[in-house]
Amino acid sequence: MAVVTFILLFFTFCQLAVVFYNWLARPFLPVAGKGKEYPSFSILIPARNEADTISLLLDDLAALQVQPVEILVYDDMSTDETAAIVRKAAEQNIRLHLLSGKILPEGWLGKNHACHRLAEVAEGEYLLFLDADVRVSAGFTARLLSYVKTDPVRLLSLFPCQEMEQNASVLSVPLMNRILLTLLPLPLVRRFPQPSLAAANGQCMLFESATYRQLQPHKKMRMTPVEDIAIMRFYKEQQKEVTLLLGDQDIFCRMYTSLTDSIGGFSKNIFSFFGGSPWVAFLFAICTTFPLVWFCLYATPGIVWLYAGMVLLIRILFSVLSRQSVWLNLLLAIPQQAIFWIILCTALVRTKQHRVIWKERNISFS
Image (cartoon, rainbow, N blue to C red; front, side, top):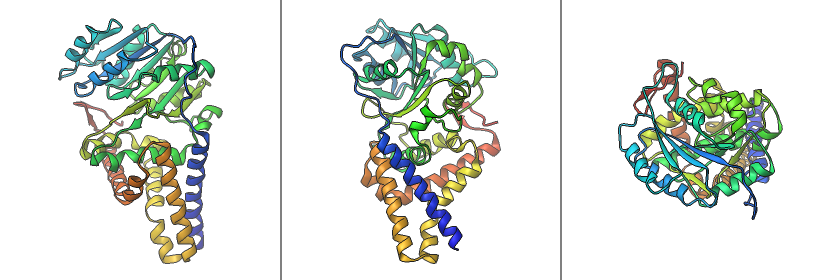
């Protein structure tokens, strides 16, 4: 009994230590310097059936204080009005260009192929890949380029702030930030070469162009469903400088608008947060779900209060770092954990079936 109690307390303390370290590190983009000359960059947007969101992003990009040399949108055979919306926006923005996708070649996943095709024709010194459902402020690119101007890296990825106006969002989206910020000390991604110390978010990835063309990461990972994390690890294996930061109000996104979509979306890649291992993912779920019951049955009241205090601090710190509501994440702790289990079980079933449908295409885990 005592051994199990110690292991569970130690695991919780390690989570608290990691999230506290991330809080101390303040892993955000710095304020943009004034009067700086910035390197040229291209904004690249892979798009498939994004009619509901892409116009908002294109409006944001037109208002950027530091403009790219080009904005390229790859329409990956959308079946909605995505292409028409981009064409209309291009009439008002000479930097905006639409690339029309063809039939997906055998041996490629859709987004990986779209990103590769975009990079083939881009002209900037840096390649900024954004998902079509992301929103950015006018000063976003100034801050982003100020960072790489001061601390040159070959790859920088940002986790955008997540808007959560729907019930489904507050139940599911915080899970991603909690896992990230309690298991991975973000500054160590930059400082240590181990590929295991890596994570990324494909919603926002900035590549130094010359290194991208040398390594061809999207081509290398052309059949990898969770290409963002795989690319970050690949860059570390190649001993290239990488950085992972958190976004604030300069970049944000509403990922899902229904509980079904959020479960389906997160189940595509949940195991990748745990090194691709379902065993580790379920072990994490067990160690974050049942300790309170264990302590109430087999530990002293002091241990119960110690554990509850650590969990409280963990939720406060990851919420503050993620720019999320502390009160909601405390109030919804149990429902969020239940949704986490549903996501894990859904991912396990889909892994066994080797079949995941996303945006009208099969994305296989095999």
